[in-house]
Length: 310
Image (cartoon, rainbow, N blue to C red):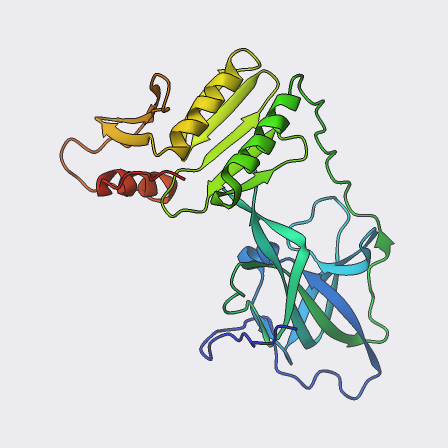
């Protein structure tokens, strides 16, 4: 168990709560209350072990078990039950953040978890590579406290399961060939049907390739530059050229006025160009704030560093 403690600063104000000493003369019991950090972060009040606190509880019974949850944003019309008690212990749960095939963002992996004992909510710091996904609070309440009745959670939305587009077997064959061709020089992240794939070179600064197959379009990216190709059409041959361009160090980007100009130079083909809108700077020279991927893209272009081969 990961056991570095996380506590609020001594100057934090905790309205709603009172020090420990809660109903020590009365018979009581403990329950476990689950809290979502994202739900609590905006609308919850900080608390610590030993505090007396009020939770608004619902009791969900599903495939995850029988759990009490403190609900800050109800998802149905059934009201929660207000329950006061004393915080006896807090365990923070974390899940590793992993990249998503064909995407630029991370998601949490519920199969790779850590826990740590903490003494306050919110916590300070997270294990490297992990994100906080839950708190489990041991909550001492009077034996006669009114607790919510068990019920099923609000139904989750149905998963969007689309039929696999025709001719995708060629993508699987292509990924297998890339794996054999480049070996350890590229890390491949793929979905089971290869509709979404990331080719991430292990060499620093080399250009990554991503693609996502939709019903009749194949969207290919080198870094943040994108090409939308009719599928199947000649999309596969263009995809091969784009991969060859990135792998050989033949990808470059510039900014022309208000446009990103991205050019892929395959070793044995004609250049392939993609354009996208770039930030427009004020004519009067006033301040402009640029952040995120656009800022990273502009910084890379401004550095003049080429993208090396894989």
